[in-house]
Amino acid sequence: MAAPLISCVVVNWNRRDLLRASLTSILSQDYPNYELIVVDNGSADGSLEMCASEFPSVRVLQNSTNRGFCAANNQGIAVARGEFIALLNNDAEADRVFLTALMRVFEDRADVGMAAAKILVWEDPELIDKAGHLIYPDGQNRGRGTGERDCGQYDRIEEVLWPDGCAAVYRKAMLDEIGGFDEDFFAYGDDAELGLRARIAGWKCLYTPHAVVRHHRGSTLGLASIGRLKLIERNRVLLAVKLFPWSLLIWNKVYYLRRLMAGASAAMRGEGETALFPGITGKLKLTAGLLWGDLSALLLVPRMLLKRKSVQAIRKLSSGEVRALIMEHRIDLRELTARAAIR
Image 1 (cartoon, rainbow, N blue to C red):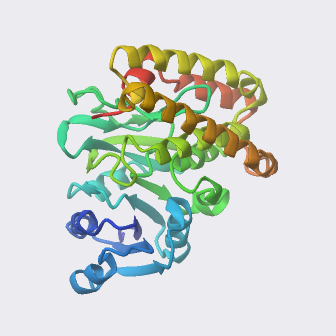
Image 2 (tube, rainbow, N blue to C red):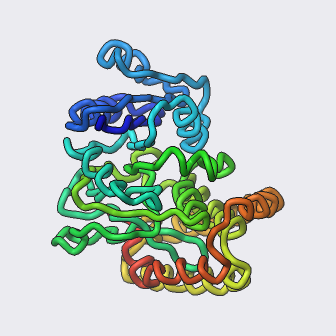
């Protein structure tokens, strides 16, 4: 039997050299049947010229402006011919068996719609970036194992909440059923929204440690970027409003305040995301970024409530089952605040 066709989609924005390494890693795969699609978001650094001269067989979709991670991936998915969609960030490099290992988790499992890879930190491959995802009950999601030394603790195939969009494979039939990325998210938290929506629709996600990727963390906007922080905070709220059961959503502010207090405590110890914004000036910028994220989310709440209704058409899990799923894959508060970023 012929191996299923995988459509590999790579979104790029002004990361020519990283893109070259990423594409090279895909074209070195041992999987026998795949196509490669690059969606460029208006790069001005010679990325397109590099693709044309060095990777002439790669299909390139060109945008005149930066349409964001969500819209660009949806463009790639729309033209994909494969039964499966593989996503790889332009700042990530996949091991040779990446596609083969991810495809194995779908064998004889019609209920599996997503496959998650072991993502390591490019600068220090002994550090885990993500091994699947966890979530806090206020909507903030975090990579499982982020910042931990890779000592084999995640070296078994197992169910996880959803994959990180940095390196994942999705069943195309699942995406046709539930829809692609929510373009209102633009970037950050978009894979969480897609993943949780898929889980609500009854699809499962399996993680395999045999698919390994090395990732340059924060290369798009930077780990200490206020722009990144704004989008993460905004999209945390949007995800909760759109997908959380009401029994959990009404407690959102309580969980959020608990997380802020834990984050402040971690900052005093020099740990976590808040430690990336040192001094009074840094903390003021951090606070302003969070407020911007919350206020901008409020403007989109009516749209999310409308989309919340549309989710009912694909729902397989009850509200109680969704709540149980979130709490089962809940990240510990101290782990969330102390290991929020790898420096």
